[in-house]
Amino acid sequence: MAALWVFVEALNARPENAARIRIAALVATVCIAAAWICGGYWYVHFYPPEKALILKGPWPFAHNLFMETKEHLFFVTAILALLLPIATRENLYSNATARKLVLSIALLVAMTGLAVEGAGAIIDHGVKVALLQGESKGAR
Amino acid sequence: MVSASDSQPLKLTPATSGFVLAAAITVLFNTALACTKDAYAPLKVFMKSLSGHDWITHGLVDLLLFVALGVIFMQTKVAEKIDPNRLIGVLIGAVGIAALGLALWYAFF
Image 1 (cartoon, rainbow over the protein chains, first blue to last red):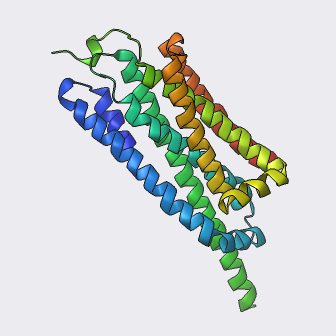
Image 2: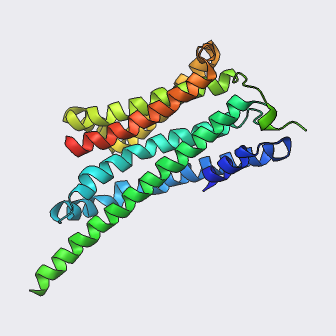
Image 3: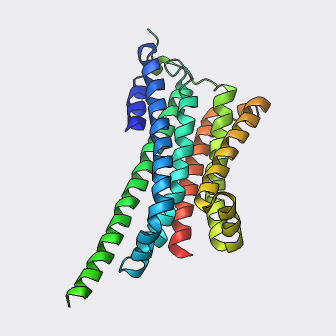
């Protein structure tokens, strides 16, 4: 969301919103850093039982494809989010190239972030269908 | 009043261009390391032994590489010699290849 905020502000870059763009870029970086720490803690400590469940269930690709891709694609989003505050130190209102760069980075952060979120939804469903399969077997 | 629409294409500062090039290289390295540790189990075991989990080591290596390359490129001004528009293209291309590479690797291997 903060990356989209940067994108929208950078589309209309003026001296008046230069500070706001830099703040939004910092917010994006802090949010990604928090996701890295909190999500990483969850992944390392609590994901292994979910992984075992997914692999026994009807959607093993939820781990083999989506989780494996997601956990490494996240690093791409994180590196781009770290780059964003550096790029927004340029004077975007007077430098069209810098503005294009910031728009590109912000859009890439948003797009890769959405891909990571979408993969997360499929992984959740992988757990859900595995649990449902176990429940239906138990009911028989 | 100066607005972005009136501005002309300009160069980027050494810090910006250096870290953009560093980011492009790091995201490609990230995909290469992910595929290598997946294909070569001893590397995954070694990475796990360093921090307790290969994913933690992977993230730290990416972070260190990004910062180290960024500082090196900033001080040597290597990235400044590249046309800024081409540099933006390199970053977008690197992210596209890195993301697609990860998805294709885990889909087929």
